[in-house]
Length: 398
Image (cartoon, rainbow, N blue to C red):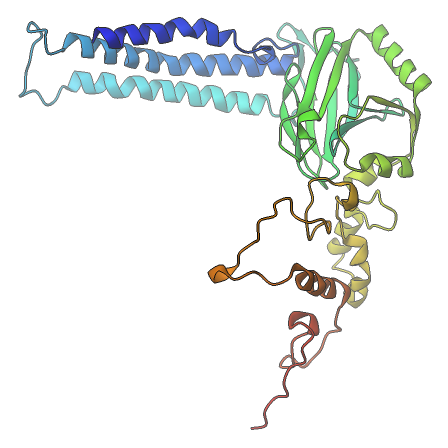
């Protein structure tokens, strides 16, 4: 027993070292009001749970010591089987904690909804009536971040800034796979998804340079998908805007399509001007010329569809965010035509090698390239692309 207590004592002695092991405690020491409220929720929830955990741990150790075999003074009652008072204590305390924890979580979840506009700058200051929020449009690319400032007509890559004590309205989307936009000092993470827009409302209350990154694995360049967020006073923010306009280039559709190609460790870039409607084109997945926008497609659907001529829209609706497969290091055959990284043979059913991927790819191309007109003969042969171009045998005569 002495050895066990000594071991437990050593574990408690390691707790301060474990607390110092993290290089950055930004989550528990944020600089934005939303992140601060989320920090408070973590603290409150942890304390409420510790109200049960700590006594349970203490009583477990106490009972082990109190009723050890060598303690002959401890009362031993093998006939004991029930105590109403003890049952009330055992069940009422956890029930009260669960009710309190559920109430706090429910209230905070609605209060900290990322889609909910801010109602204060911090715990002591409401938002002034004349305050104008800053709108930032965020696009998660492979593997970099693109920020649009529609109020100023500029854009940046892997760097953004905002004035202190000014509400920020984020509009967030992605060009390819799902990512997660996260600035721990500012607010909680929120997903960025292609063809969809998520929102986040936040405010930064202290000047400084903060880290932002993707919190959702998205491929080879994920670990370098980071950016810097600058919290500046209004004068400093105005200087930053002027620097972007003075040093930046133009971001048009062609420049965006080049930027969209997968790449990692991208340097900070400034764009002094942005083509009108570019963010909406990215959001609607029609930045590539000739593609139908998602909004247009939804309008067609809302009007009842495109009729028999709708097959002409098929190519315009093929949204392959990895269309530049030759530069995508993570893609393998048949997505990009590149061989798999492993040289081990693949095995199919019963250990037999699978069919050649070229034939599968050929069949898929047939399915994509061919289409058949509606046929009233429902009992006829299946379309050729569904039976590998093998003609169906003639129906037998009765």
